[in-house]
Image (tube, rainbow, N blue to C red; front, side):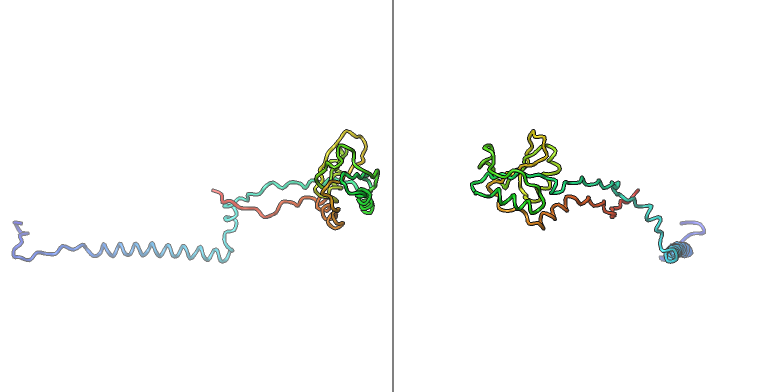
Length: 205
C-alpha cells in the first residue's frame, strides 16, 4: 500500500472484531432467557392459585358417548300355573311321561294329557325334547318351559289353543334344578342394564 497508509517492515496488524458487538449479542440473549423464565414462572403461579385451567382442558376434549337409550320394559311372561302342558314320551323308557308330568306339577304347571308321543315323533326325537304349540307360545310358554329343560327344540303348529306339548326325547335325563330354573327365569325377566357412564374422550382440534 502506498501513501500515508504505507506499511513497512515484516509485522502486520491483527484485524479484530470490535468487542462491543459481542457484548450486545450476549446481553440480548440473556434478556430473552430472562423473559422466558419470568413468563413460565408466572404461569406456574397462576396454575397453583387457580387449580389449573380445567375449563380449557375440558374444551379441548369432547366426550364421545353414545346417546343413552331408554331401557325397554321386559315382556311379562306367563306364570307356570297359567301354562297347560301335555307330556308325551317319545323314548323306549316306560313311565317317563308320567314321572316328568308329576315333576312339572310340583313346580306349578298345569298338566293336561300324559302318554306316548304320536307316530310322527315316537322314537324320532334325538335331543332332550320338543316343545310344540301355537305361534303365540313362542314368546311365552316356550320361554318358561325352556328354563325347566334347556336344549329343547321349539316348533309351532296350527292349533288355536294355548296348551303346549312337551315331547320327551332320547337325551332327556332330568329337568333343571329349581334353583337353576329360577336363575334362568330371573335372567330373562331382568331389564337390560343402562349404558355405562364412563365414556372415552377424544381430543378436539
